[in-house]
Each structure stands twice: as structure tokens, then as C-alpha cells.
Length: 304
Image 1 (spheres, rainbow, N blue to C red):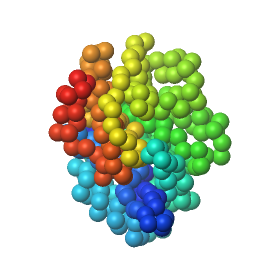
Image 2: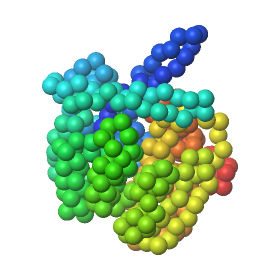
Image 3: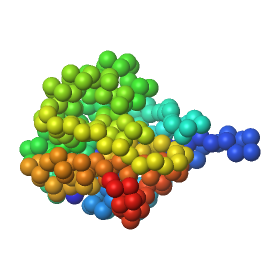
Image 4: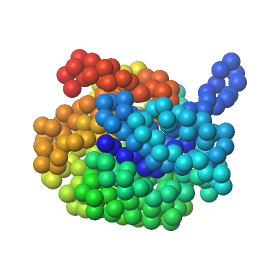
């Protein structure tokens, strides 16, 4: 089982039709997107998070129950649900603006041992790091997971508008990176942390770096490789990195570290590349997720 813990929110995706600009409401939140992708791509997924007891929160509560194998979502009457406003440029690349001040996703309860003990991989969301409460929660969860013999996964997923500055964010992220076994970075995040940090501090970790239309790169115990992705007509890149990571984690679920060989990691991340690429063909992080059959077929055609 892959247990994803962290933010679940509404992506409000901007669009213009007939001269009128409006926003469409879609379910989102990086760890929740990953949980939904994990189920789509054939592994067993569980999600643990909190939403407000409000209109958006109830929508997400119902949505989660339909899209992951186990939805452990709490309705919080004291705090509202987070919103992420997303706007796309002509290439489908997105920019974010978060409405997130003292919102429900910052008030996570401790994951019960009965849930934690059944997981193979514990994937922790990064939005919580923007507040001390969340940063402490994430570090504690990673330590608890390790004590239970679990693999800890972390996606940097840096959003500059929720941190006071980049230096403060990098310092917080470094703590979580050191507590993780599997780490995902974008090309920009890899550059921000620096090759020296990644090569030295994360040398014992399995690191994957998404490179957009160029595919990805993985690094593990001194070995590395770059893998191309498949060509697609991109409409919306929202959630592409989450789909990529869901694909990777779904393939790593149940695969012990001693089998993280070059051959197996090439297979894992080639599959992940296809998952991420196919997700960009339509709008929305979760609604656009391809089926396992689509991924398998596209991978076979491309030789991935």
C-alpha cells in the first residue's frame, strides 16, 4: 500500500470562453493527486488529509471516496478548505496562486498506527512545510514511518508564494530531504538545491528529477541515467509531475531496495514518463489521468 499524507484542495483552473474569463473547480493537492494516480496505475492507495466542513470541502470529501482505495479525510468545522488558482499560458504551462491562510490542510491529525503499519511507502506532501506546525508534523511522520520499517517518499513541489523567501524554503526542504528515501525534484528545484547537495547529501537516496518534455533523470548510489519521454500534444501541464510520481511509486510499491537495480529503475521511470506525458493531453490534474491500459499501450508503442 502507498499512503499519501498532506494537502487536498480545489484547483480553480482559469479559462476564457467567448470573451468571458472563468474558473473551473477541480480536485487537487499534490499528495492527493499522487494517491489518485497510484490507484489508476494499478497499486493500492490510501490518502490521509483534512478539508474544511464547507462547500468545497464536502466536494473533495466525496471525490476522495471515489478516487482512492482508502480515503481518510477529516472534515474540519473550524477552518476553510484551501484553494489554488491556476492559470495556463499558450503552451499549457501553469502558474499558481494559493488562498491558504490558516486553512484545514494545516491541521492534520496523527496518522493512526493501524494505517501506518499497513503501508509499504509513506508519501508526504510539501505544502505543510510552509508553517512550523506542518514542518514538525512532516518530520515526525517520516521518523515514525522509518521506525515501522517503511520507505519514506517526498516531493519538493516548491511554491514560492507560500514561503517568505527561497532561502527559508530551501532550509526547510533540506530537513525533509534528509529524512526521505525517495525524493522527487523538478529541473528548477534541482538547480536551486545545487548538484553538490544532491550528489553528496542525497547520495544514499533514490532521486528522480523531472525534465518536462525532455523526460527525467534518476540518481541512486552513484549511478544515474536520463530517460526520454513520449511526444504528446500538451493542453495542460497541471498535475503532470504528480502523475509521473504516482507512476513511479506504483512501480516501486513492494519492490525492496536490494532490487533497485539500474535495469529496474530504468523500467520504473520509463513507465513514469509515460504517465506524466499522457496526463498533459487534457485539463485537470486528476480528471486527465490516463488509465493503466493507456499507459501500457503507449509505453509498448514507444518501446519505453
